Length: 77
Image (cartoon, rainbow, N blue to C red; front, top):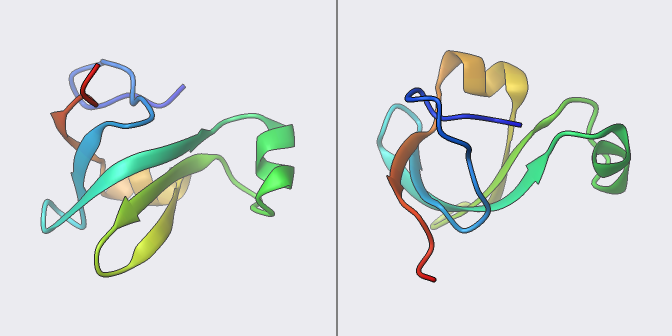
């Protein structure tokens, strides 16, 4: 499971910032298992974020180690 810097879990629907806090997005998918990676044709675990103007952006585990997601808020209940 992926976590924010404070140790809390990254959850689908969370509002986040990436690109060193410059770009906002919503977590669409958390990819951790081999089957999930195969389903979306990637070779590394990661997080799929929906962001304007980019659309869907896949941030691999390597990317996230160098530029962690910044938590903004959880999805409304």
